[in-house]
Image (cartoon, rainbow, N blue to C red; front, side, top):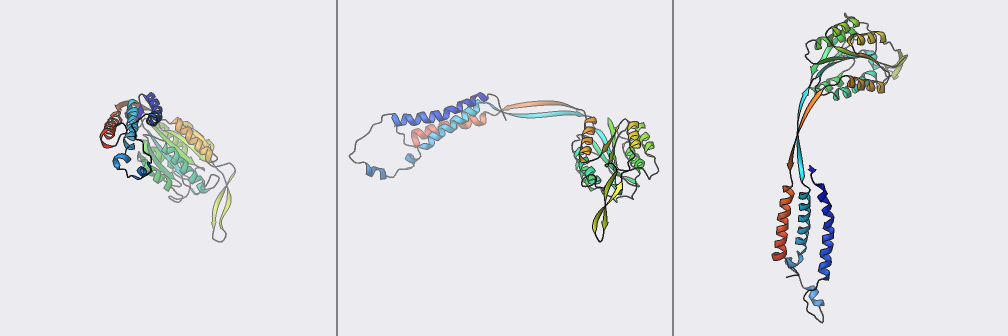
Length: 330
């Protein structure tokens, strides 16, 4: 609801002035009267509804005036119709689920931090199809590229260590993602790779998988998830409970950088949660979805819904004043 002529709301300040003037007028005007020596007994005479309800038509006049003022302000409702022309992007997120992702240099650990921040990134995508691939020693597609964002988020948050044999087959993970995107007709195809280690398994070399992506016009963003030096790794002890053992941080940054370069993408290092969040912001800016919008606005006047009740109330107040309740002027 909008107001085409809101200046008429200024008339509302006249309402209390009219009420005050009416009260003063009734107090000062001269009316016919009879003089009695003692009128105390008259105060105890019961009045009927025609006397006691005399205030109702005055209230009716005030409310009717307020309705008419609102109608003069010309309330209008807006109905918008939006036509969109979109060019979607197909994105496959490749997750490392090797056991080293349990290290707690990111909070609460690398895997959970990566899942939560990836979910926030995907929530901001519009009209894109998203897919999920997980890998350790083996790799498989958890969700093929789809626009069912509820399914994507549900499956993303269900990712856990132990879904496949332990190891780090980066080349296999990327190759699986490339296979999912090779028949895509999207205007842009993107792979986001998250890993915390070095390639130590699989039949496909990581650089070979990057060349496969480049040959198909797929851009890759690689993210190294860990701090520098060593990271605390939880070990379950049946006697003393969970204890932590420092493990060395081994990320093959030159390889990840080269993989991104060959595909026209970028390499990022996420040393903490804030850095990973910032990385996703940068990727979000790089991978925008063009949207053309044509907005049609339909305005509809709504003053009748206020003017009609105001006139009806004004009419009934006049009837009540003249015929239903006792008026001192009659």
